[in-house]
Image (cartoon, rainbow, N blue to C red; front, side, top):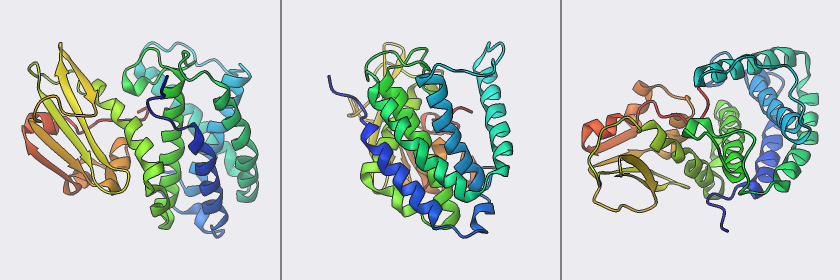
Length: 277
């Protein structure tokens, strides 16, 4: 069976590019601010290390540490993850940049090996909640993890003017393909008529066209347009990733977005997230 969005082979590529970028930093670069409020380059690098360690501990070793307490809603889960992230970044202030690089290099390979060991079509331990799924296949979980590694590294690169490295088609396209799967869930309450179609396009390397089609009272993501689009939204490739990951405000994004057609369908794109938030 064909994996809808294959990403597992790209993890070592992303890891090597990350280490290359971090090794190029000067001592003062590590304290540079990023587009993530209150997080420096060092904080994001620490967060990426946490992703490796937490996944290996919980998923490979089945060690979950502290209990999150009652999780009764999506917001409860977001709040819990935000606390975990903040606690980790605060503690990692004690760790030197050199050691942080060593730990990222040390943990990247076993994390990749664990992901490779998974049956891509078996049920993932954690669903992709931002896509509205209660259960997800491992291939989607892996693709979600890829988008995390991609956009956090890009946040670092944006802060030092090295973002072009990740706009390679083979790296950016899987990020976009995965993130677009947030659209049907985001549009779930947008009213439409049977057969209505919306087009979302991204310009530049790795970009392309995606279509939301309303069928049997649900929005569905399609690769082709079953009917002529009633609205076409075109996002500049340089901000599309920021648009999906809370990295740009609506006001800042508007000059980089073109809409043609039904305004009610187009305006609903604002607020879409392909991250937990």
